[in-house]
Length: 240
Image (cartoon, rainbow, N blue to C red; front, side):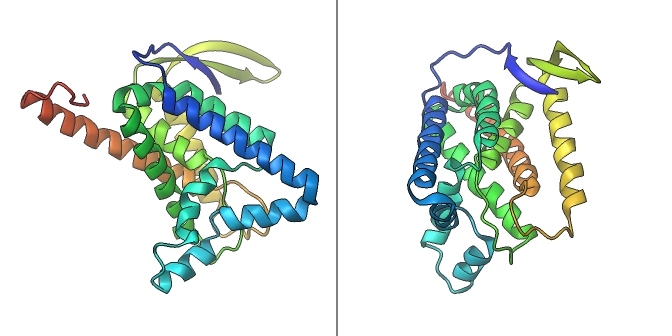
């Protein structure tokens, strides 16, 4: 089941969502340029420097180096991708679901939510395998947080999805709670299956997806709670 669009209009232009999409494409163009000029070794060095390497992050924090390049990679890694498919699928999900979450949180609020959600998602993957030397990159964790927030904020929104039925496919409108719930269950199954499997090369950071989704859902629930309290006290800017 691949979501293609949702029937959930927004009130404002999603400036932050568009900006993140552009930033990810610019970063990927930089990666392509590095590969063209310096080969795979130059790209690998770049990814290792700016991606989250769990062993390096835990070592830095173990030494009390909380304000460091290793910590910064929790943010920089969110704009790097391992290939065209990785980039395009991430941007598709962000484009479909990010605009509505931005519309609800506001531009500044969504930017903070997105970056924090991505950082906490990255830490979820680090917690699962803190000694790994494999860099983790991609917007998947931050987008998973966005999906979690959408799941809580807009469960009944209709999402047009491409559903494969053997050799056939069909476009159907499905409630967001089913589309995103199905996606989350798949991440849980794949994540639990991957436990204990030695990763020596590239792979999917399933626990970044799982952690990001849970974090995003919790943050949206907190926003709803605070918004309701602020609304009762007469604040017109409350998040509801």
